[in-house]
Image 1: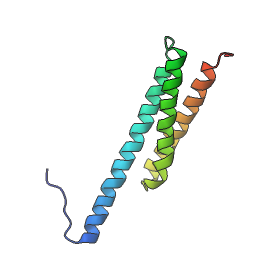
Image 2: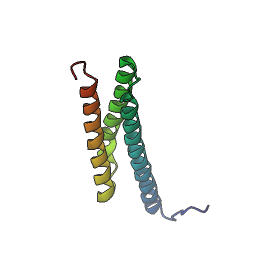
Image 3: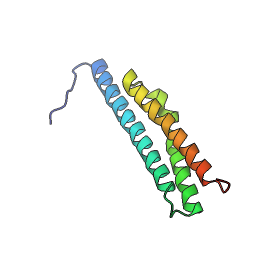
Image 4: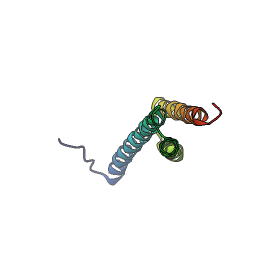
Length: 105
């Protein structure tokens, strides 16, 4: 596959910047997917309390990574909104799983 190689340095920097943003957006989407998978795994009925807690910690770490890097992504508004919505949904799912895991529930 032939890639675009701009002749002037500014255009090349802009091209790299777009690639960096695209990679960061992919990273954010992947972290949300990992977090969602960890929450689903933590909700399995045969999961021990220790395993459930570890999986929820992994989900929380994925959410924190998204929150940390979201503002650096400079993605287009629809993509930014999608990632923000999915991050908020992940946050809600983590909290719901923590409440469900409490002994009083």
